Image (cartoon, rainbow, N blue to C red; front, side, top):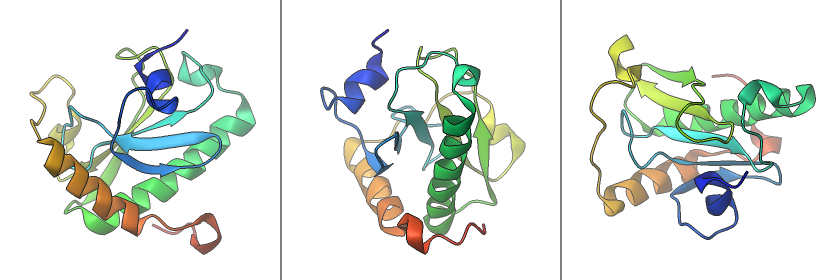
Length: 140
């Protein structure tokens, strides 16, 4: 079941990449709720998040934690919210959303309209803050 995310993984569609390893990819949402809103996806095509096998589920959460720490380092926010909705794209994914208040994670509100240059600048800052796995201590 190829999706837009499969095309991003294959390099057929560009993205504002935050981090990547052999199993997962993190990139900015182009229709963000807040600046720094990032998607984390498995490279394996899996439609429903809870169909991910247990080891990969644990691994995507650990990868997401590293991404969240990088986002929190550079974005002005109180917390990084985490949500799995799964209705937008038929490919499992996690939303990491910088939050000031609960309403920042309301998917029914209007999305931000950021330019490609703004997205590229945000992605660059988060990329710089993303620590290699051997330097990540796990603490937020």
